Length: 105
Image 1: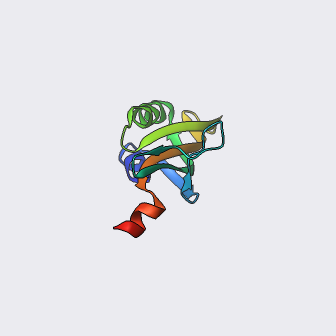
Image 2: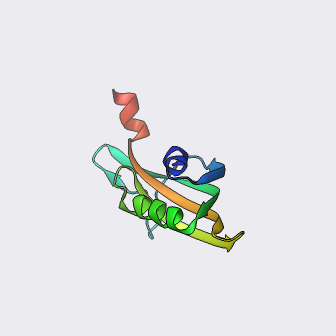
Image 3: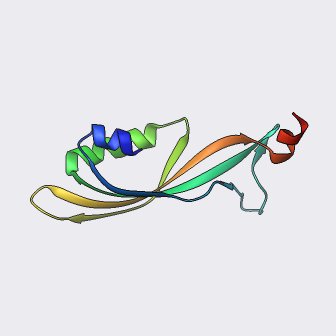
C-alpha cells in the first residue's frame, strides 16, 4: 500500500497494521471455504496528498481484488492550497489455510 502511494506522489506519514484475525459473520462464525478460512487485517494509513492523487489512489484500492481491500474509514482535512491530510483505515481480506489443516500437512 505504501509503495503504490509513493509512486503516485502521496506522502505516507505512517502505516500501522493490526494482527490478522478470522473474519466473523453476523452469526459469530468464522467464514471458511474448504480447508481455508477468511482472515482480515486492518491497516491505518496517515498521508498527505493532492486531491487528484488521493482520488486516483482510492480508485486503485477499491478495484483491488487480491487481496480484497475495503475502505472502512476516511477523514480528510485541507492543509495548504491543494494538499490534503488523509487518515484512512483499510481492511484487507485473505484466504489462509485453517490452523488444523496446517497440522495435517
